[in-house]
Image 1 (spheres, helix red, strand yellow):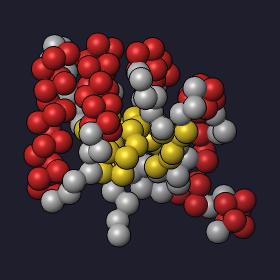
Image 2: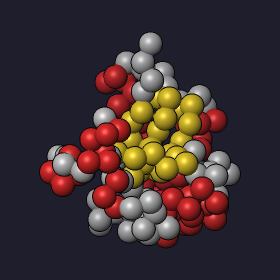
Image 3: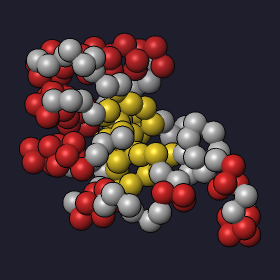
Length: 149
């Protein structure tokens, strides 16, 4: 069996109406679930928006999808501390994870985002662990990383 993680893309910058943003999530999920031939996703991630109210409206829809069995867990994708705080203020179900680009060259937690998430029960999951969009040459040449590999 597969463990399916998928995301709701960031809404267009000019989409500022929370109700319309919520409808966009419903429509996106309906179309994508049908195209994939699935009943649920294991993890459903939400991209951020410039508007806190839009993020909250979309998060409420994700919570409905969770309650309806259309997702087994919810998370965020590339959320900064401001965006996480926005969601956490009103969420009935906090994000299980925040999926962010992190690599060893960035240091342990330079911006404090990981610590902020952890303090609210939000786990950090990284992509681009050796750089993004491709591995960084200086990381690949690092003797400590070479010893681990």
